[in-house]
Amino acid sequence: MNKEIENKQIELIPDKDGFLFEIEDYNYLLNRFCGWIAVIIIISFILFF
Image 1 (cartoon, one colour):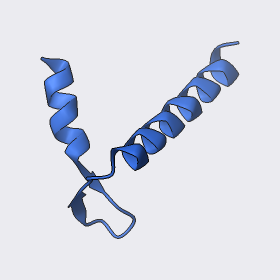
Image 2 (cartoon, helix red, strand yellow; image 1 turned 90 degrees about the horizontal axis):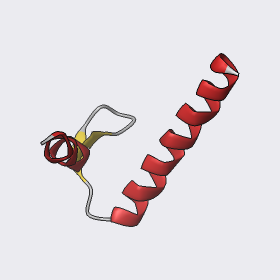
Image 3 (spheres, helix red, strand yellow; image 1 turned 90 degrees about the vertical axis):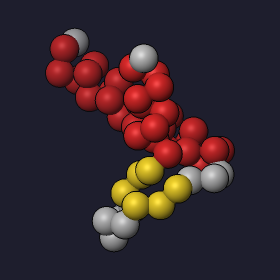
Image 4 (tube, helix red, strand yellow; image 1 turned 60 degrees about the horizontal axis):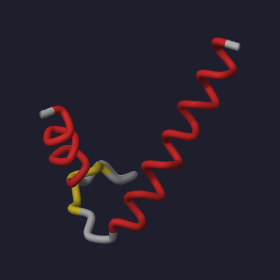
């Protein structure tokens, strides 16, 4: 159920101007998502290790 909620939220992402737009290019979405995951992992290592 959480994955369904996340998928609905991922479809609408605010851009730099604050507008909501629907992303059709999933390569861009995947790239952005992986970038955020990498940042979170790096910050976690800095804080906890």
